[in-house]
Image (cartoon, rainbow, N blue to C red; front, side):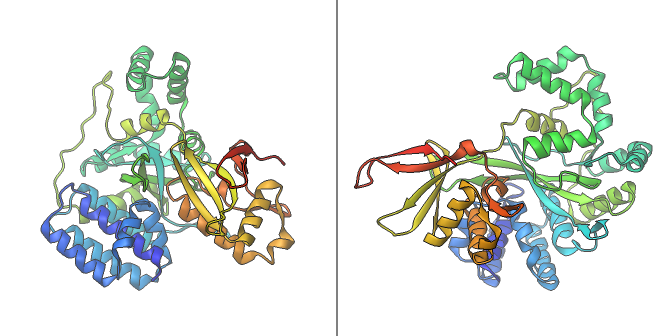
Length: 438
């Protein structure tokens, strides 16, 4: 088992223990046993604070089937340490079931050569606690048969989901609900939730709500605005919120980032059947009773569950994308350094060998020929791995990693975010970061 996999297991254990906001003595005892079983060290527990639950689960998909099943059984027993599996714990188990235990069983073939498996994705969002779980249908392009089927069975799926305290969301029905309200009422609510926004921005959000479709919710809101990186032409799928993942930076003055995380489940059968499977699995885990959600009266704005999440997504700022500063050789360590600068007071360092630095520098300047890549394959692979580790707290890391463009390898990061450090004195005490040319 690799270090990254032990870090991932530590994150999953931690999230399960904290899920009900109560840390009991038996849970700590069981955690110690699991740390011993999986040989998890204190440093790996600390490192796990810097990754999301979704990253942890995706990291463990490389384990063999038997190891994944054993881990799932261990985590399920941990959820019952206090004799009850609450809502958040059940949702985490649901994610583990589909993404680790049964991931191949529920894969969907979308082309003769491509299969899509259940996976976890994350959206940067505001601080929030899980209130009501929800299931929302998304697609990358219009699937008329799916939409016809959902329209026909919408009320039945809503009723079934509400019996378990879950909301089933179908964007066209949601739009109808918003359209039944007065425009000035909705814009006043938006203005209350985001007082820093101007009138034109508020009108834009209202227009987006009024015209939203299953495709535009995914493409315009989740994919383009929040940089959720799954296939932009996503196959018909269900997004099931499993809670909020908290990723604090590892410095005292760094901000804390919050991510709403989803189980992305491709529709492997009729939508009604898949929803029923999900609810049955969820019910088999949860041991707490819920009060069914009732419909709000017309003119009552529901600020919970998906309704709150939707507005959080619409008014959230774009995810943080740091500047890149090529520093060069550190005379103290002889290592070559690249800085990722998030803000004036917060940055991260990536140290490279001279060969890796030269390759990374070439990728951002004008690109490195692919024939050169054949001799530097292991170097480029290590660079990509280092970027993943250093930038673990941002959703979209791909622009910071070398990718093939025709016959060259390049960085696709915005050129305005790339700088080069110029030293102003021989002792390298004073410097200036200037935009990189070329």
